Image (tube, rainbow, N blue to C red; front, top):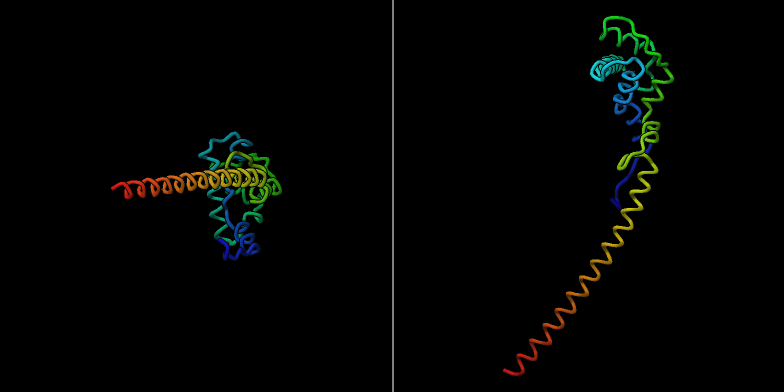
Length: 154
């Protein structure tokens, strides 16, 4: 870890060019259009497939692309009421991590809480190890004393 070189810009470029938040869009479609999760997921799958084949990233998709994908899956035009900006907001990885704050999530506040918790636990474990090492040293010293006493009386 100490020698790891983090390329933040490369990481940012890659996360914004992949579809890791596509399930959030499916959830939005499911709620807005009152569709089953399966149908919404299929719509997003079609949208992603079309976008990938045209070199379009998640933050470049449009409302029209979503409507086209939905029509291809459902067979009719749907009133999705999801704007291009709304889709892009849902698909934005930065927005995604800040709007999801559950235990163990990647939300910055949760990450900070977990790091602080681990630091406290690490300190506690370190103290426990020191206590056990001291106990072992004392036991070893007592064993040596007893062994000398036995050796002297033999």
